[in-house]
Every structure is written in structure tokens, then in C-alpha cells.
Amino acid sequence: MIKVLLADDHSIVREGLRRIVEESDDMVVVAEASDGNEAIHQVRKSRPDVAVIDISMPEIDGLEVLQQLQPEYPELPILILTMHEEQQYIVHAIEAGARGYITKKSAPEQLVNAIRKVYAGSLYISEEAAEALALRVAKGTSGQSPLDLLSTRELQVLRRLAMGHTNREIAQNYNISIKTVDTYRLRLLKKLGLRNNAELSRFAIQNRLIET
Image 1 (tube, one colour):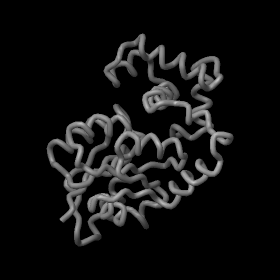
Image 2 (cartoon, rainbow, N blue to C red):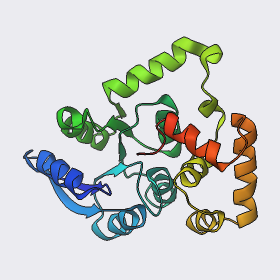
Image 3 (tube, rainbow, N blue to C red):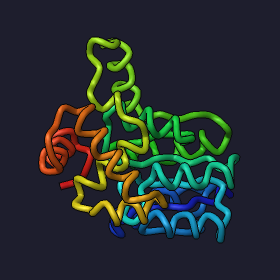
């Protein structure tokens, strides 16, 4: 049996995912988590064969979970589950160590297959995500999104700022100094050509970086 961990901050989503997973004879859900910190704790406690993790969670997000778990459990296949089809999320997730990337709208049809594939050692990218990556390649540098200029940490700080978190809260979440957070904020403003936090929030909403 493939032991699966499900991490998503919406209980109704987890319930639906559990039902999909446990309809298969070859897998079982051994743990659930509603935020990033709990996801890390449950991985350590239940030792799943595959972790399915939402990218947009409270406390710490899916990318940060990836970055924390990779050194400790380099062989654990982590499948990112998200509402985001944008190519910058796919690239950052794969760079952070994800073995697969699947959007929530494709999950019912593809989740079980994705779990089996990453468990077997392969990479899995949903059809929607693959199309987004293909568009990125087709456009080349001329069609580069401003978000392509951001590092994974900059993207994380942008999302936190857009959700209304203070510099102090962000610093505590990522174990960095408040000064470092402000450096990231100033770098974001410069890279994106924006003037203040309100414009950063508007930019994040327009680019579907946060759920509204």
C-alpha cells in the first residue's frame, strides 16, 4: 500500500482528496495536515510514501515545506496540489524539489495516477501545468513575466505581504531578520516597478498569487 499524506488548509478539500485516494486499492491516507507546520510534523510522525501538499497554506506555504523537508527526507516524493496554473509556480515548485505538480481542477481525474507515478520515481506534471510551461518556452524571453524575475523567497515574501502579514510576522515565519524582509520588499518593488505595499497586494491579486 502507498501511504499518502494530504496537506490542505480546507477541510472539505482534504475530505474530497481522501475519498479519491482511498477508492484505490493500492493506497491509503495515513495523515492529514491543515497548515505547513503540521504537514512537516505529520511527515516526521507518519513517514508517508508520498506527500500531497497545497502550495497556499497558513503558517508556512507549500514551497517552504518543500525546502524544509528536502534535506531531511530527500527520497520523499512531494506532489504539489494548487489552484495555480501559472508557470512561475511550476518552475519554483520543481526547483524547490517537488516531484509533481497538479492543479485542483484536474485533481479528481489525475491525482491517483500522479501519486502512483511519483511513488515509482517519475516526475508528474498535470496537463494544465504542462501547457503553461510550453507557453513559457514558446514565448521565450520576449514574453517573460515579471514574476520570472523573482526568486522563490521573493515570491514567498510577496505572497505574505499581499496577505497583510507584517515584516515581523514574515521574519518569524522564515527565520530571517526584519531587516532582511524589508530588503526583499524593496527588491520586489524595484523588480516589479511598484511603489508600495498596496500596489504589491494589487499585483499579487491580479496575478492570482493569493486566493481572494
